[in-house]
Image (cartoon, rainbow, N blue to C red):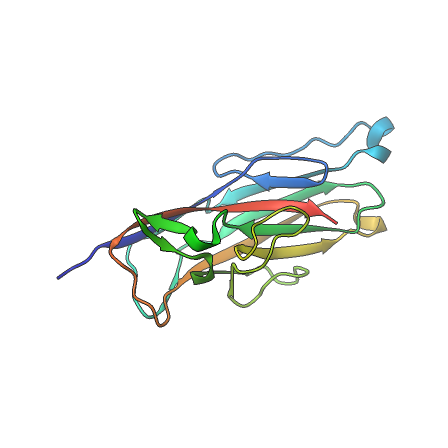
Length: 193
């Protein structure tokens, strides 16, 4: 008997500031720098998805890692006050037990892994890592998050832009997935520390 299975993953969120920013699929949002007179007291960060906002796995292989076909291009832009120590970009699923669903059947966030392919990114997972971390600074979900980068903000880097490529994987090693069309949303947000 032939069983059809597929997975679709979308990235979503909204832009917030000064302490938190996130990104929404198909919407590129940036925050304009504050006027020079007010710049000392204003912080702004934004996260945008440049590519790969919708990911799809048309065919799934049981008992094996299944790589999503394209990377997710994430751009972080910041203009921060001197007291900011770092900016973290966090990917998370709202429900760690149901990161992707097909009717009553769920795929937990622990089965979905990510890694940053861009070389030299501070605090980025370079090997596939499951979305099982806790949130940071009020961003993320407990057991359904993954820190994608931790950019230190030093005197010379109070403003800047960083683009990274995130690769995603559905890890079915030792597992069999029930037939269905699974979908879910991976939220990408930034928070200052």
